[in-house]
Image (cartoon, rainbow, N blue to C red):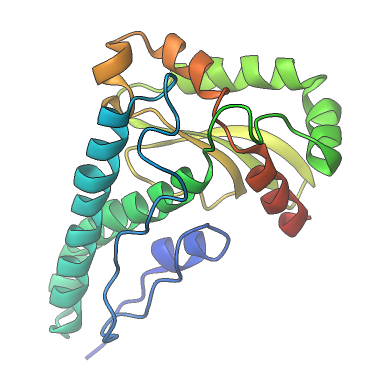
Amino acid sequence: MLSLARPVITRAFTRSAARRLPLVGAASLHTLPELPYAYNALEPYISEEIMRLHHQKHHQTYVNGLNAAEEKYSKTSDVKQQIALQSALKFNGGGHINHSLFWRNLAPAGSTNQPSGALKEALEKDFGSVDAFKKAMNEKTAAVQGSGWGWLGYNPSLKKLEIVTTPNQDPLISHVPIIGIDIWEHAFYLQYKNVKPDYLNAIWNVVNFEEAGKRYDAAT
């Protein structure tokens, strides 16, 4: 019987920082990636408590959900059941992709938190200045209604950087992700309560622009 493909996961993942997702029915399982720094390394801007909960609980939940959905998918050839599993695959697969990218998107304050090279030149060209980019990124990300993500993405058709948002855990597939900011409450509420602008202003102290620069170089 016909087996449905899952382009949402595979297309988005080709340029993400997470591990390549295996095809449905593959023997390997998705696993929680290790952080490239200690849980308290982003303080005082993102607390150790938030990082532990965000990584060990929330991201782990997406990994578990993705593995469970893929296992169910691999065991059925019924098209209706495969269609019914699409939302779980998209949500948990997107959560795994987005968070795997997000952890490498961050670095301890004072290490690699200023753009340089080709990325800096592109930010100045497309937004006027680095500060203007940060302001525009914060405004658009803060305007996300409910849960979602703010992205700096590279538009391969227009060959320029653009700010876009995605709802829930939808991965960015229209652009190559360069920087992603998690605007779900679990990313900031314990520390910043409901004041999203404070979280967005603070996160630039721990954005890993060295990693973002590598993504930009690869995209261009």
